Image 1: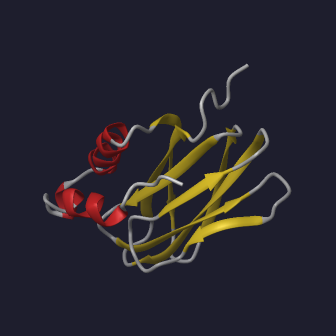
Image 2: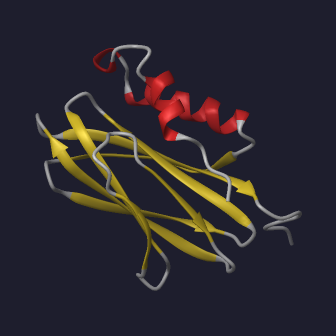
Length: 147
């Protein structure tokens, strides 16, 4: 399964001081990296604000034969943002609960379904903290999602 490397993206992202970047500017680094890695835009941006330890969810359709990478960024008051991906039945598929503010989860499926992404504001020093997420896709087999 292909995926971006968050560490490489983080190096690009933090070339400019975090406090000086808007969420859109931070996400633009992922947009460029996704495009250069052969990923296309799938859904988003999804935006919101959360207090410490609060969660919210959003959903988007996924198709078989493609890998979906969901990435998120948060503002300068956030030091830990987590993502959890659930399938249409509510089963946890994958999560990124590392202590970082640049989470990514990668989802693949063999069916058309809705993926639900839970955003968890794990550490917010000055509430509310603002976040943004986008989903990107890359066909993992020829003609994935066609018809």
